[in-house]
Length: 281
Image 1 (cartoon, rainbow, N blue to C red):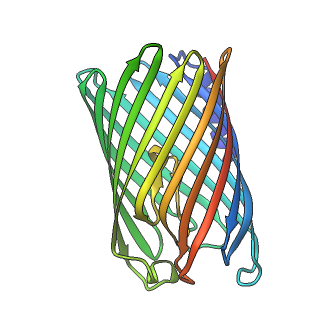
Image 2 (image 1 turned 45 degrees about the horizontal axis):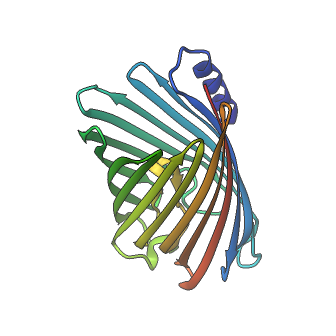
Image 3 (image 1 turned 135 degrees about the vertical axis):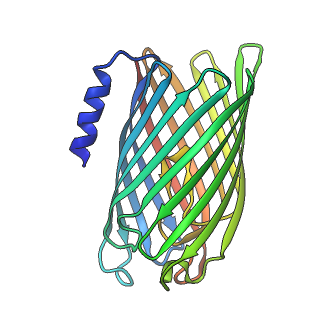
């Protein structure tokens, strides 16, 4: 599958494009108070291709996590594919579809899970838009329905470009077979978040905060999926970036607190440090 992704990237890069980019990233993960995981690393590659009224976004991600043995029998290995297509009707409406495939997860029952999403964005004014996207995730033993509502507001303060985003997520679980992953989970969840992005003379600053519990959530506009049985109750993130010619270098730190549901193990802290390199063309 990773070779198919590279072929897709090559095909897209050969097309006539407008304000497009490719990205590669590496992310370290550290778990505190977990009874299952120690630390890990994630590698990713992707592209964001704009052509006429269409936008194609895709990413492949490989993860390698050291686990505690016992209770687990082996370390965690994951492969994931993320796809998104958007079409701008140029009349204040934009349509998007999403697809996620957990190609491999060697220790979890969510191995092979697939997510399908569809949404619509409406530009209320030039600097305000709202997007509603509905996701459906199909696992062998349970399904997850997620509804996302986001509102984006852009403004400019002197030479500083500002973007504010509010996010509301409603998640509902549908258990098909009795399993350890959903045994101690609630039937539904409601969580909200706020994001801030500043852009000034080639410098970027971003921050985000999420409140409210969530499980098996789709995050980052359909490019992250939480497919292990962890009930997150808060997340904080901060990031900085710099334009260097046609490149953008970004550094992010994300802190989350969760409960491991199978063992009902509380106060698990997850710290992520992510380094991303974008090339714009």
